[in-house]
Amino acid sequence: MYVTLETERLLLRPFQREDAPAMFEGWTSDPEVTKYLTWNTHQTLEETQYVLDLWLKEYEQPNRLNFAILLKEEQRVIGGIDIVGYEDGVPVIGYNLSRKYWNHGYMTEACRCVLDYLFGQGYSAVRIDAMVDNIGSNRVIQKCGGTLVNTTESVRSLKNDTVTVHQYIVKK
Image 1: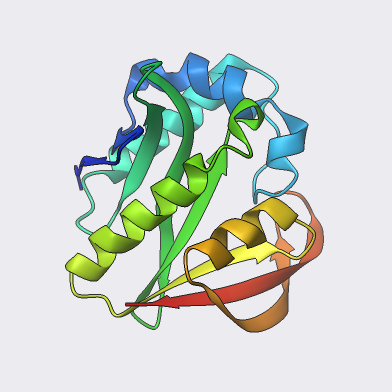
Image 2: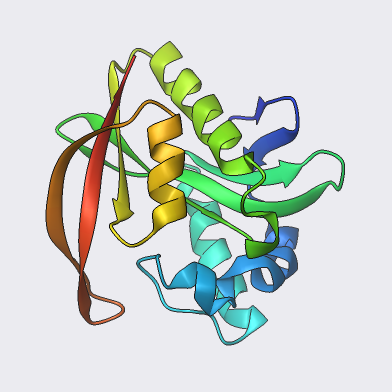
């Protein structure tokens, strides 16, 4: 699904094929960012391009939302936020952000924007998960009104490990 959203400082738009270099430089190749994600750090730009091409095909699915986050003043992709799935009809959000842009409120701003959009589409709750030791991500979720509802073990098959995850619900 092709949707574009906007905040005071950010533009959230569908990814484009040309975004791969910014993604690779910004976060897919950064082990400090990817340590909290379900997929491994990318070693080459071609790996990022391959994954991005898969994402672009997914836009044809009616419930697939995947936003590139652009900082308006730079017009550069700095992260991504998407619906990673639905649990009992409740959308589950996932996100990532280039380390250079951590601690500036950008992800909180993007997350609130996507939450507002989803609530406007009729959803009354949204789930957001974060690894327990990902302090920044847990803080973003709390700032967005998330209530901790569960702590569970999650298997990351691509990384061949198990992590402890907080599950939060944000209600309309």
